[in-house]
Image (cartoon, rainbow, N blue to C red; front, side, top):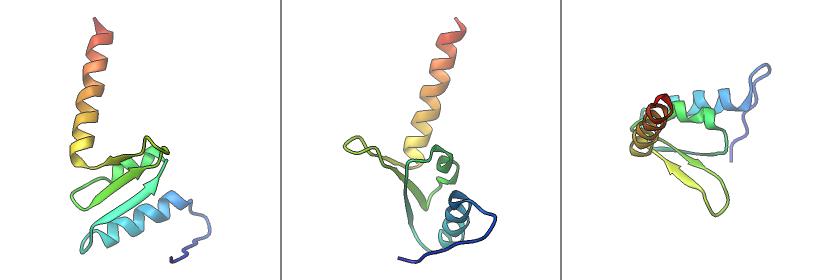
Length: 79
């Protein structure tokens, strides 16, 4: 396990930067509970959102479904 630390930056900033650099040549899996990480999801970056027994693998398909579900909920609320 490599330890990275950069003064003035939060862990999620460093994780995001390393994931973007590494994803050009590798598949990346980030284990986190931070929902801000969803913005990193692409063809090569997946998020494993840790929630104990209810952990979820978040990839492009999951993101698409989540967005569609969210839009549906907003439409229902507008009525």
